[in-house]
Image (cartoon, rainbow, N blue to C red):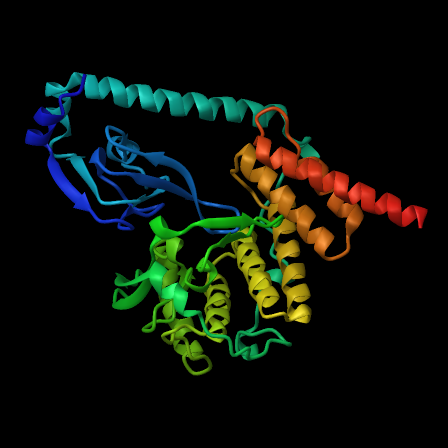
Length: 397
């Protein structure tokens, strides 16, 4: 049994407030944490790019050991869901802690063994269900969905000014903070979301999450006002050194064409600009169709909110093209569940654009009984049945 009192004498103790972030996905890490009091959420990036909570850890649980032992980047983001107190073990005291608390080493090895077993089972399933060699994914192919010429002032034809302002209730779920831009290394203010306060209302068929009195879509993009680097808040630090100079050069040009800042309260026109700015940033490097796809999908949701049917259709088509590019052409390292979500999205976008036969194929591919997510299986089966019924009624008519 782990002696917490003895550990406290060897390791540091750190306090985190509700909604405070321990670390982001991809951050370097040289510490592990043992929860003494409180609750934390484990988040990964879902297919549409939004943080998806996959686990809740409580008193006695630990996390961060993989980065401490292997020196690898963080594989998930951790956020305090309430006031939390943790023991912090780092490289300087790890050997001493293990020497005096060998039972902790056993718990760590047991946890890592369980994770490895789950990964091996999933990889085994993926190999059994892999496509023939001629259908195997190749290098990423960038289609028209991935580009926006600068001379269009970043907006596609048909984009308008919508004059919608964030409701006052949004303020309850936000707090002010600041972050350091990884490109120009200057600080700037940001709005952080209180994830512990969010209450999920419903999830649409296209996997959009709706929350009571709040819309995270409005606050997910961050833009550095100094160099015009733009990205999602949960991916903001993930930029390679090789691209930083190019991003700064692009930013100097964009500053002459685009005003990129946020009012208080925020306006929907500023939110649209932020998403299109992320598209501009992505063009600096090799375009990843899965990243452009999640931006086009979010833009389609926003255009739906402002009831612009023309732009809703345009961005839905862009999202479908980019997701199809990602699914059929790009190299992907995804789990069974992530592939289910992707094919479900392809089905929903195809159906949204009137491509019913394509939607049927994608919904069928979403059903995976061995190793698949049961909720996603049920959703795919329901959508498949609904679409078949609609097609039968159409034929009878």
